[in-house]
Image (cartoon, rainbow, N blue to C red; front, side, top):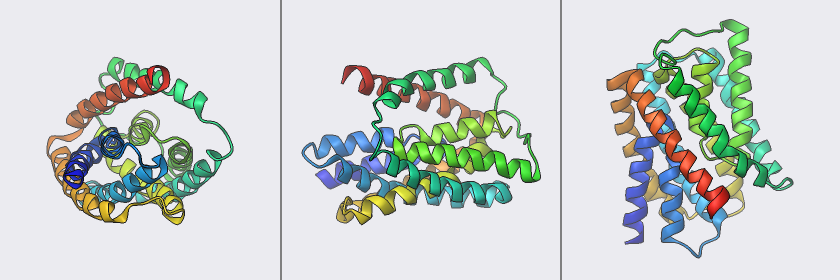
Length: 252
């Protein structure tokens, strides 16, 4: 029964995550609920071992249908990997309580800005070209990669928002681009957690298959319905993140 519950959660998480990020909202609480006595690091490692494959599958699917700007995204993914490793190291040195309490307000500002700017992300008009785009995308990858390694909740949504707001992408292209960087940051975290033995591979392998299946379905839905649909899912996921992170920071 435990395997069935976490596998179904992984399927749904892959679906949501492939569209706009936020799959951890579903899978991580499910793991903690099913295995309340397990070490948190092991549950987080198992989550990464399952979800990274869904993110990679979504990235591959998007790359076939969306003209990704590889000249900027590949360096950004590499910097995201480095940033995630650095963030994971930093969490062993610095407490993350300040970020836990600030996160709901940061997400609230992102949501408010998105709701006010109703035209934001509807049109794909990249703001930078050449070296400037490489620097802009690389900065996003490094910054959000470090955040993912240090803390993590909402990583995919932050990537999407910055690609829309700063780089001028529409929501569909931003989501596709975010998958490339998020795959790199997830792999970095997985390497660290697996090296320390914090992965239940017998659960992770089955969950990974379900996550990939959900991811492929979600990607197909996003491609079919376009940027407006992705924007709607983005608003929903960020709203859920605000509630979840506020509860964790102030009520739990």
